[in-house]
Image (cartoon, rainbow, N blue to C red):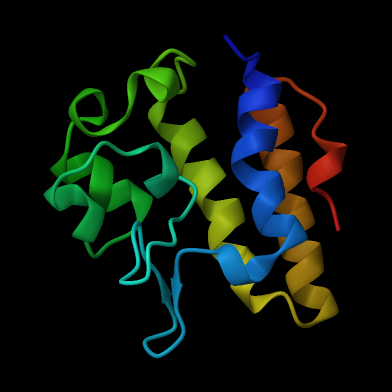
Amino acid sequence: MKTLKEFILDTLLPYKKDKSICGYDNFHKVCEYLTYDGKTCAIGKHMKKGPWQEFEGDANTLFDEYDKNKILKKSALNQNIDYIGWVLIQSYHDKIPSLECSSSISDINDTVTTLEKHFNLNLDELRF
């Protein structure tokens, strides 16, 4: 089993390296758990197949609507990430498509700091 740090980095680093793979709808300017062309967001890549993949709402609302134990794959559940942790992971992903100005970079790096504090990990690899 991957360590928690490995799991978080495996989830988020691909988006940092190539924002075109983000589960993002360029027309509506919103992130999606699963796009029409098969791209996924941070939580979406760990979802089982089901109607929740088409859910329109942020991570907070997703977990209000669906029990994470029913929608996430076993490999994700094995990490024992709490609700806030998933929201923070998704928040990092959601900021990637708009990384075009220094304030956006500062904002995403603040999210990394929050992730580090929440999980008590060093995640410098995620910084811009």
